[in-house]
Length: 293
Image (cartoon, rainbow, N blue to C red):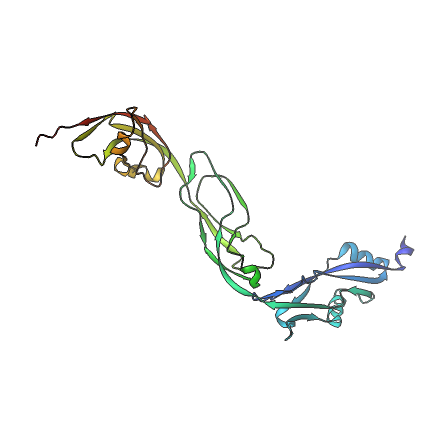
C-alpha cells in the first residue's frame, strides 16, 4: 500500500467561487459558475491530503473590479489558474480545469418600492392573545431587478415563520422571502408581535329603540342584557358600559311580527374579543300614543 501511495495519480477537485461587491443595480444575464472543477496530478500521499485533509477556500471575485465597459464580468484563464495554484502543493500539476474563463454578461437593474407583509403562523399560550396588528419595520423596502420583473412585483413577504405558545410580546428580525432575479434592500425587516394576557368581563348594557316616530312607544323586555367579553388585562378597568351600545331602529321592530328581535352590539371597544350576549333576543311591544292636541 505504501508503495502504491508513492505512485502518481490524477483526481478531480472542486473549488468554490465567491462573487463579492455585486452592485445592487446590476443583474447577471445568466447564472455565473459556483465552482471551478479541476483535474490535478500528484503522488497518492498528497492526493489523499487533498481528498480527506484539506478544505479549499473559495476564489473571491470582486464584481466591482472585474467588470468592463461591455457590461461583462471577465475573469481570464491565467487569473483563474493563478488562484487555483495558490491552494496546491508545489509538486501538484494542474492537468485541466473548467470553466477556463468566466465571462458573464450583466445588465442594469432598476429599483422599485414594495410593501412587506408578515407570512407565518402565530399561536399564543392559553389566556394570551395577539391584541393588535403585527407591525413591520420598515413597511416598505427597495427591490432591484429588471423592468419586466418589477412590472409584476407589487409586494413581498417575510420567510414563513411559526410561533407557538407565545405569552409575551416578541420583536424579531426576519429575512425577506427570496424572489428570483431580485435583490432587496434591506434584505430583512423587524417584526413586532404584541401579545397580552386576556380575562373575561361581564357588563349590563341597555337595549335602546332609536328613530321612534311621533306618537309611538316601544316597550322592551328585558330592557338590558348581559354582555360577556374577553378583554386585555391591562385594559380591564377601562372597559366600561358607556363604551358599548345596543341601538335598534324602530323600523326593525315594526317589521318583526313575532314580537321578538335578535340583539347585536352597535358599538364596542376594539380591544375586546369573544363576545356573548345573554339573552341574545328580547321581546317587545309597540304602543300607539293618541294625539291629545
